Image 1 (tube, rainbow, N blue to C red):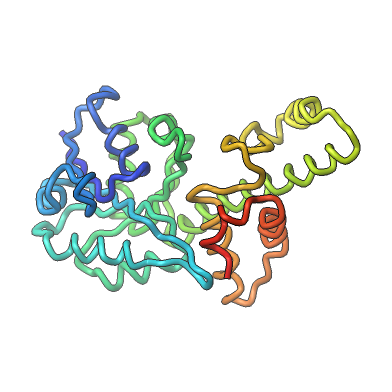
Image 2 (cartoon, helix red, strand yellow):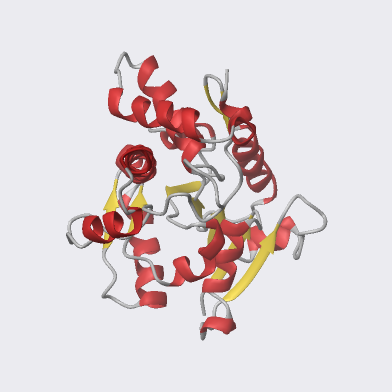
Length: 277
């Protein structure tokens, strides 16, 4: 019987709980902990020491010049302090820029760390978790093999599993979110043009997505929240973080910066106040 631990019971952690629960026909034993007393279910000690796989899903918010790792570092330190085992695997689910997991792995040497990005939308996180198109697992093959076997046990062998290094897994996550942000910004610009020339927007979208290469996600303007541009917990944070990360490397991401500039023009400023320097 598989033993699963969850640290951080927000929408990402809760989706993991749900995906391994009896509600989904899974017979794993799931223990979970949150630093927030209102969300706390099990103790940290039980969650860590009773679990073979510990999913860590804590916030990594953006600020003007990067991302805040304090919550993630605190969570890993707390796990390290109570962990009495040497064989459990720590799966970092929080979004972090390339190179971060390797540094954390060096600091927390006695933890078996794997980077396993999530590809969930907040409004449908539980559904997304149990209907994933692929799993990305970055780290030492000794540990990624075990995580791959866990996912095969839970979801069968038909869902693709990509095992790679830390940096590649970290980059894949940003590639996805930055592409979606660019797509949203492009379509917001097309909506402005459509309104200006008096085109039928619904028919324009129908004709656009009829090309199978386009895809049907991230095309609604205004978005599901009734507002223009992109907001929420993921896209603004990750776009801003990858721009700052690339600037520090001396790389100019003109397309992504253009998507961000479009978003600043069409999105209510109140929604983006945490990302404005």
